[in-house]
Length: 169
Image 1: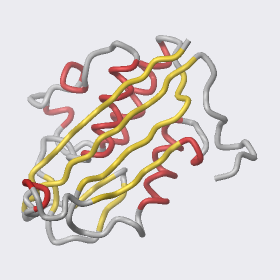
Image 2: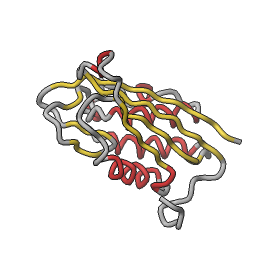
Image 3: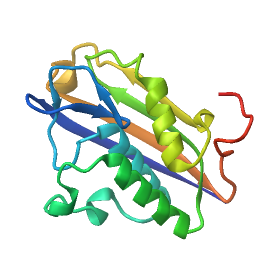
Image 4: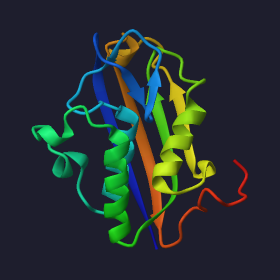
């Protein structure tokens, strides 16, 4: 048996905040506005995981008004979500994510993002796909007003091999 989940998130770019995506600090003059670290990539992934397990969305589990979550690393929240999904006996088969941003260029950060997310989810890096694209100047992300991310996950009864496997990465 398998379950598919999707997630989407978008935050406004603002001055005075670090830009964190996939748990990685990105060199950029703007960061994402939000109650936590505003990591849209991890937020989309969490929503996809929660959706596939029929556990609602991240707002249901991590209220924006709760001071416990102020500036918290989204990787900590991802670890909690992974635990919730595991309690339902679901295992991650694979995750595919896309960052939507005009700038900065993401290519040099993607492998580190994959490593961090794979480590939190206890799977090999080969089970985690991250891509980046632009909107060719269209819409709010195209104008540089924000960054968005989308994710799709497949959960099953058998997990993707763990990080100790010899799977091609």
